[in-house]
Length: 78
Image 1 (tube, rainbow, N blue to C red):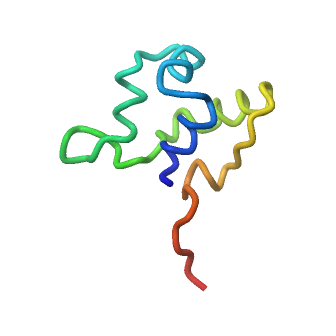
Image 2: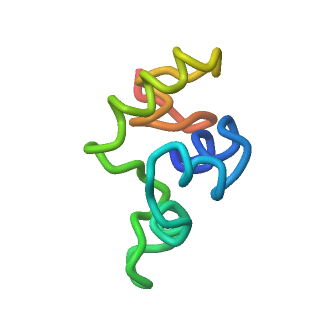
């Protein structure tokens, strides 16, 4: 899963996450879109990462900094 997939899933969808961040849902949806279509290729903008970690802690949502940067289920170098 990409970092965007993880965050969107943990915060129960694009619209709820957009409301929490005070963003338009299209902004959050763009995180998942390929760069060739104006998206972020599954990345979470660095400007949102600290805020997301704080929101996760406040709301009891399991989320780590590593998941925000690397995602999960990806191969890691030895």
